[in-house]
Length: 263
Image (cartoon, rainbow, N blue to C red; front, side, top):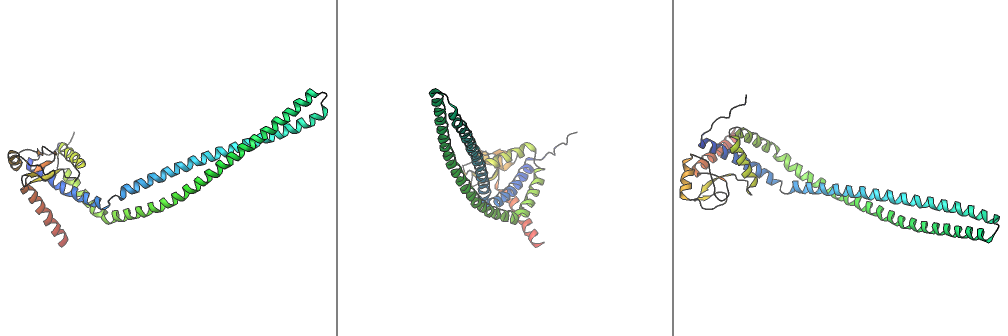
């Protein structure tokens, strides 16, 4: 049998959401300490992967070039064997026609050897070029891997310094999430993900939305203060609460913070 969700009043829903927002904002603050390092590490790892793919391609082309060189050496061996055969047959010719035929065959095989040697030289140049590219790419990989290790070290250091705090905040956030109905929680997460400052629920400040700072109509402000239903900003879609509710939760959070420091 499916577990039934506990019914919360609108003020309780708003209070729980705002508590969740305070915790999520702290988690976002910790993440911001890492700055662009996670993205930089990810980009550098992707770049290294591309270099590895490029080197694999170079090695494949290198093997193909070496195979062509071996093939041309094989042609030269075959041509030399035929020249030797045709040369020995010239001592046994009985007419000019046979002699001319053997002479042309020897000339043709010599041309085949010349062409094969040319192709060997061309492929040797390709081999040299590919070896240089592989060498340069390996140097680039070593340099970038060194930079990556530095960046990873910086990131790991920041993560290590904030891990316990972040884990504690996430545990607290998870407990509060259990006190928020699924549909409202999904709305909260969607707004949080979309909002630039990560604020999904904000207080009305000086008759304006605390998220986008657009003016709120007097009737909407009254509705928010009455706490009878969930009210959102008509401009940015953030969930709105009144300043009193925000201040109550801020004071509770500060008191808990002071008590935890004294204990």
